[in-house]
Every structure is written in structure tokens, then in C-alpha cells.
Length: 69
Image 1 (cartoon, one colour):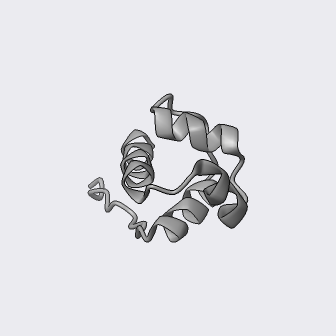
Image 2: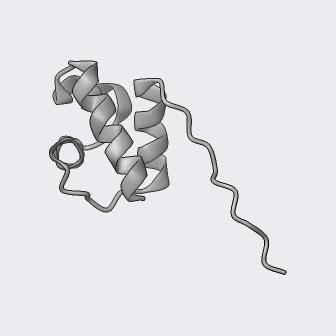
């Protein structure tokens, strides 16, 4: 999930909105937002990732894995 958190961190930095406002809009705890923004890679749920992606206008796409034969 490192790449996903990196994308969220970049989007948070580009969004220029106080973390407190993002917390109110998404319900994601400000401590978690701060850890993501600072790159400390917190353990986050898929629901948290989805909430932030929606708020930041990002699209989550599943990665296709090659089938084992």
C-alpha cells in the first residue's frame, strides 16, 4: 500500500487545505492525516483510503495480477 499512501501524500500536499478541514469533510482522524502527509506510512484501512481518494478527486483502480498457469 506504499504507492497508494505516496499518492495520497502528494495529493494532500497539492490540495493546500488544512488537515483539520479534511478531517471534518472525510471523518479521517487528523493524526492519521498528519502521518500520511509527513510520509510516516501509518496503517490505514481501505475505507480511509477510499474517503481520502474521493475527497481529493483520485480514482482507485485495482492492479491486475498475471494469472498463474
